[in-house]
Length: 298
Image (cartoon, rainbow, N blue to C red; front, side, top):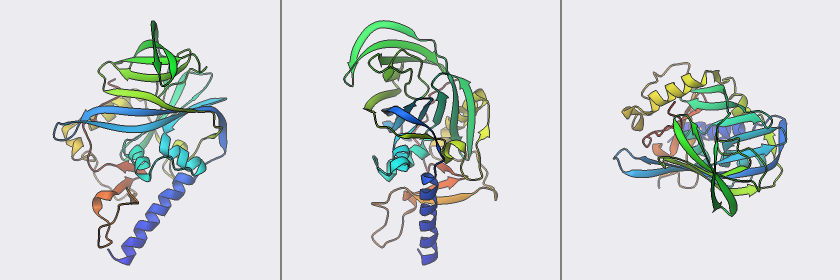
């Protein structure tokens, strides 16, 4: 790789580092934060069972509750890299949504990507929970059981009244206590609390919420977004050709970022293609995927 290409790559990495560091004035501060392990049971291209996993964080503030990727949030907020750069990139590649709502309201604003665009939609987050008599200790908390229907799936949640909040992972909310664990009836998805801290951190309306650079998110109806995402991602072609549906355009803003810093170079110093992640219009594009499992069927 010649010096010009190396310089271009380094500039690209620096560019994304600067973007990830940009934050607007905080709109709130947290009362506490909750970290969840998110696991997806799926299959690889050979039909073998595999598990996709990442971590998310729920920021419970005085006025707002925000859900987003765990690693990218903590790294951009205070420089503490709780996870590796690789895990931050995984959050981008899995298109981890950012979900905002006011603590006194159920309506949610959801920011989520379908390559090659950012989208934003709102929805009423009211869930009808059936409160059950079962109890279980999860992650050190005495929990009660509840069930609800959402997005075409039945969800079981374990919540604790020891933590006074209606918050939970992803879009699961509205119980009389913090959701500590949740899973769907087919055991495809699970969220499990791994961390609860009283650390006071800002909740920011930053570039990942407002839009990236000059490319604000496209407003869309929730139903249209879900239908489009499921149609595209559930195609058999998606696993080996994740961008099969997009015709490259001269208007696409494309750049590359390192997927791994520690083990990124060949012995001769060159950078192998498989450790680079392509971004189009600020949206990460995976090279290949495991079988897509939709959180929302409808």
